Image (cartoon, rainbow, N blue to C red):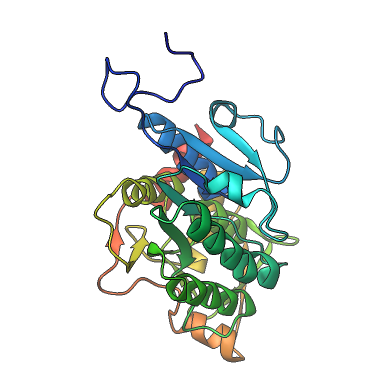
Length: 280
């Protein structure tokens, strides 16, 4: 008799044949938590690498298997990757890019090579990380190089900014004023829709080394996002002070380095739809 905690059978009625788990790093973050939920909805055992087991109290976190580990030290990585069919690598830390994003990705790849060499690696990155001198973006580009040099069975998935992040940026104001950069635009993406794409890659046994790009269905200026956010949330639209795009980082954003290319896959809910659902 199977236990409630056993992974779901790959073929109903044959409890001995089970789906191997998928490990999610950054599984309590905005994208990672959505990946965990999508795995569970798909009947795939989800395993979460976390520094603080039991810290995230959600239905998804309770149903997933938590493995205590740390990308910075490498502790727990061998156990976390053991027996998995894939790893969806969402973990990132803008304040510890060298330790987490770059070196931590290297430790993860090394652990996979030693303990689960056939597992697939789905590495989450950012659209435009190679085209902007912003330090965080340079770190994401360096992390991509770590992945490609590792020789892993992998795909690099670059995405635009998720709705949750754009919402924070659009809602930032002081005394009724917001600050924007001339020419700044976004193609915000729904995190739950992105998670579905990541899970599809994780379960693709024919996955070939490549890069994929995902973005939301529309492009909006920073001003349009601020006005839309205020309108849906019942606030007065802020007066946006537009700053010139001075310096390489802001200039590249103003030039659209964060926008999807012609081959990007576009989809998911619009920002307005996401806002309305959030308010409801």
